[in-house]
Length: 281
Ligand SMILES: [Zn+2]
Image (tube, rainbow, N blue to C red):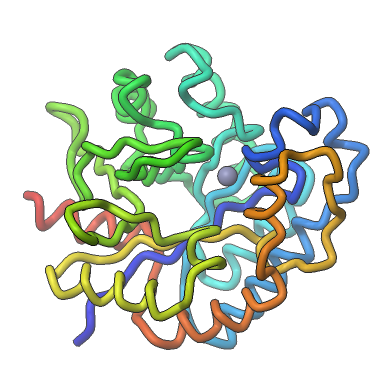
């Protein structure tokens, strides 16, 4: 039987991405056209068609505004987990601000979804060497797992020296960290999810999943609802590099995802975390 891999969606709106942080003010968010609900519904339809379950790492901001969406995610058999309140990156916070952010997001997500939140993904994989306290705070707050580390070198994020597979980041705690999947090429770790999946040929992601599975490990894959939305408003004053990354190949994404969903075995991250915890002992 093929290995079950972790499928995840970081539920945030088109204007909440890290790349636009400097050109779109948080205060303007309520005035912008929200497309996250219909885009996430489209993701739910795609997953139903492919017959896969997944984890939806959702902003507290979205849960507060779209509670019915949270219940539809749960009703379809998926997991609701936390992506923080409003996409503040962890390395911009103090440990106590991080704790407050975790609590506020969790309350919003649990209220809206009616389920217990066990997992966390840091906005823009912002747990790295700058935040040595972050996993300890997650453990103290009772999280079972985190999927917040990208063991890559990238201009916006990354912790290249971090383990590539599940590990226990805090001594005397059961907390599991499940880093996002990287491909090992020529002694370097290459990123595979999100924009990389959208921009690179799908054969690369397929190969990366098979490479990880050949080592008897689950792949951890992620993308965003805005990535399947070619009709989203354009941000004219964003840096060119951000625009190139954000808007490229949006129209091909849904089809690419459908094929990826059908080519490998996928499941919720809480299930993967429990299996990895049992393996680590
Ligand atoms: Zn995000």
